[in-house]
Length: 316
Image (cartoon, rainbow, N blue to C red; front, side, top):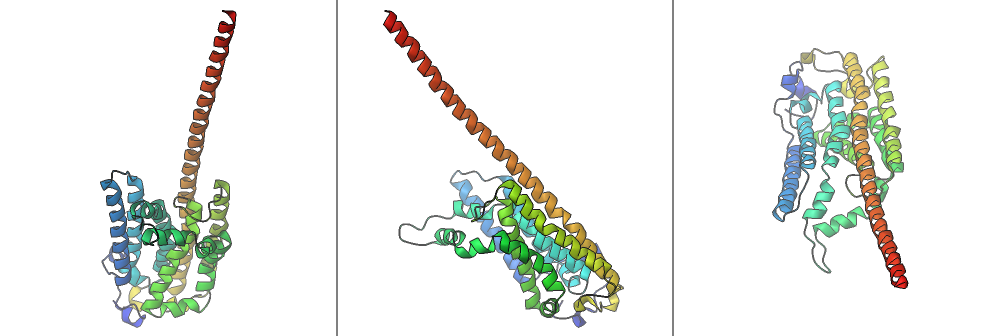
């Protein structure tokens, strides 16, 4: 099916979940998803072959995260998302708020740093280039909350409530660029908050929670604005194909409900991940303190024994 305009999609039947999950691959995202899975799999195999462990949970999380992108962009959901605001909003929410969290829980940067071989003295290979990127001023800026939170919010209001959205939806290239933007914004927003992979910003757990909740209310407000709208707010979805049997305003209201409800999903997932990390961090610190106390106790016992030995020698 052509993604370049509504006229080519007039033959779409009414939406059902079964029809939405039918195979209809976007070549760009299909290649990107397959490449991501192959590279990640190569890294895991490389670690295993040299005897290093890699958590199965991380692999599962990464694979599921990539598959959620494939589900949104390589099935008929992508075709319906071009003409139905509600389906498009499902794509947006999953790709910008669920997929990034799952991918980041897979720790792909950590895996790459462990799997890529050093290039050798005086040379630069993929590992050295990745390290240089992680320490670059560019990454420090794009992962700073002063940048990520405004961009995260602007991806809703400045996109949907301006002509930019209609312009991007007018072509297949623009649509792909918009979806890549959603994914990238989600990654840079959740990366420093999740704290699984190394990065230039590693705030404390309380600060990460504050950063998380700073952006979420704006999603809820955006959803409420769509639900309360008395006229269609986005021209792209103002005249849905008659074959779909839907009304633009009710579809817009459904899209708003999806945006409003979905803001809770990443909040719960990330909060659980942060609490788990915090708990493990406290456990590690407690073990370190116990080991230090044991060492100090051993030294005190040795000193006391030496003192008793000196008294015994003096008595003799």
